[in-house]
Image 1 (cartoon, rainbow, N blue to C red):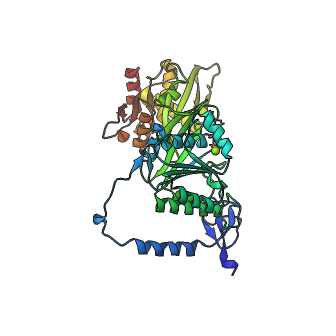
Image 2: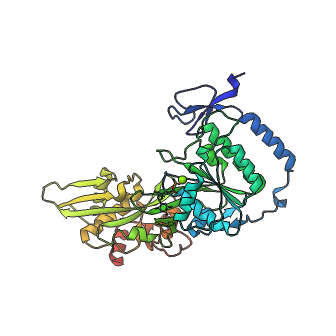
Image 3: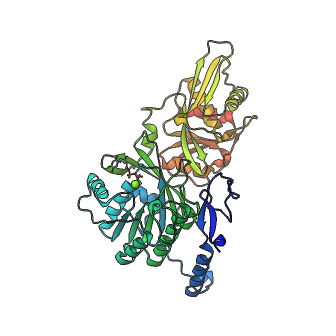
Length: 455
Ligand code: TYD
Ligand code: MG
């Protein structure tokens, strides 16, 4: 009996196995299987039964498609990633490194919402006093946010039923535990069970719930990946520890667009929305400098703006150096050959150094055009225009090939305040993108010629 009551669940992919294995048979990760209770089968069967009883089958055309009711949080940048605001009964998972500002942001949002709606902040990580201290620091002295310091799921569910808040924040899901399970808080089984109960409660009562989740070293939300499937919206909090800027990015959103980003700055008094985020990227150079070119690359599914820098300098040695950091060395040699052959630009007696700023590694060929234009800019000693960006692969025949998901890249750039772009012809959008002047090119010589007229 005991045998079919426990299964082993992978904390990376959520896959299950009837016995313990060193390597997960689903995702291949090592040492990720944890013992969990095999109660999902009967639980989900019960769930299906109750759904079947309460929901009749209706032709799609007869179902009223009401626009979801959204409540703006009062933080414009957060609303942008949420798709306009918090949705009734919606469940949001917000992940990010420790200390990045998740609790701060949510407390600020709750305070703004508490002016018109009942709100609840459940803290499992800090005491009520610590939350109060933070609120004072944020200048929220007369805050009406109701706070509960609790980690037991059943008690939290009871509180939710009694208080009936419009929005509740659970900080964090990894600290919760259910009495039903014997495993420790933060384990796969606990996280999944707690999230499932809270999600059901949100759907039943119409309370919007925000779950705070921790991020592992690898950058994934800790706990099983199933958490991401269970919730309506997944937001990631990103930011460099060396800067005060924070990005909130929507990875999944059933009520809005993904890849939306909200930009914040961490100040002495909490997080402030940044209305003009391009300032972050332009502030590094007071004015555009020669040898610098911004490119939009795709980090997994996320577009990311990266500055490529090149330095071309006359070489003191007979065989000049070609050095690249964060970009492929062989591609650099190839690009220099293409530049010479097709655009007539020679660097035979020059050392060429290329660097992707910020320590990122770019492996996609869509960086080619940016590298080429950065080299060209350094060679001429002329900066590219302000707000300039590019992307595109360069072929040996001198053609500029399209990059995947060009629209998304351009939209991200426009969102971040970029204004001029040279892109492969096939990536030119059919509808104009607001604030962005786009120059489609088919060949490298065309791109070089365009840059000459732009600067
Ligand atoms: P916090 O919201 O506790 O992060 P998380 O919940 O994601 O772990 O953020 C804490 C950090 O933010 C901490 O390093 C101090 C900083 N901070 C400020 O700079 N200004 C502020 O007004 C507040 C409240 C925090
Ligand atoms: Mg916190």
